[in-house]
Length: 112
Picture 1 (tube, one colour):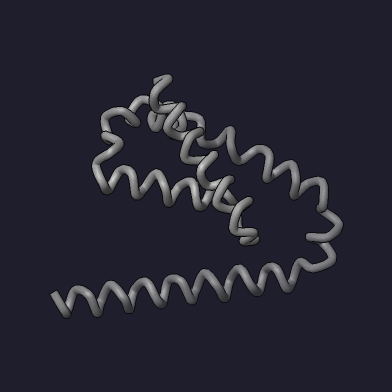
Picture 2 (picture 1 turned 180 degrees about the vertical axis):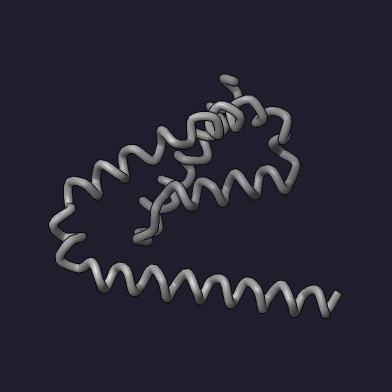
């Protein structure tokens, strides 16, 4: 478990370094996940090493949703002011994602 935590925090640190050195306005955790994905794909990190930490993280996933929910509650007035634009964007983007995913799946199934 310590090894897995070191790998996760190491990948996060690499992502933070990428953001700091490149000046890109992008979350460092996304770069960190990309680094971890690359390490897993290259076989430098074994999936079995990460199994225990992923089990713990998945069991407590709802705990990670509390901070964003509290942040939304902090800015509830902003959400209330722009409710219809947020609602419209959510519905439209959800429908677009469903449509694009469905059509992509259909094309890939036909192609294979």
